[in-house]
Length: 160
Image (cartoon, rainbow, N blue to C red; front, side, top):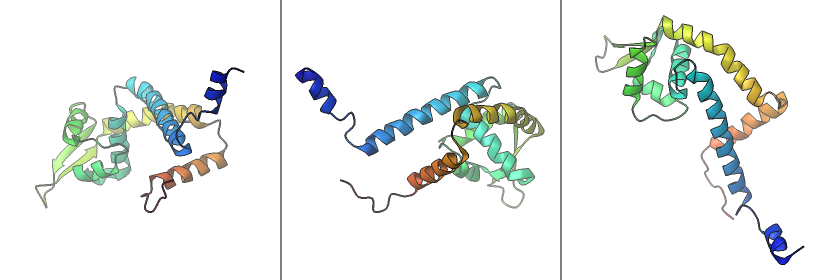
């Protein structure tokens, strides 16, 4: 083995294990998002639009105010109004001012939006299974717990 080969072998590829995990999480999230984008694109939706429709389906007939939708979104969208404009233009959601407080605009999923989500339920479930199904249920539960723990406020984390 040459001196250069020994040097390369001794060098750490990452400055810390945390850096390696962080990069691995970014790469995994990017790959999962690309798979979701490909599936949703066939139905003319972005992952963000799909997220809004799922939030509204979960809210039921009462709907949600724009600010409540923004709070529940997976990724932040600085222009929720424009996002809702596009969904309303396609007939997937409906907006209406509250009678009690005219400043509040309530958003509800339309029957057309519900039908679209129903058509997507199977393909999205299959995509999830293709992406994560090779992991045992116990490992998936552990992964959920670990990811939840990562998202918690760092608090008093120690820095080496």
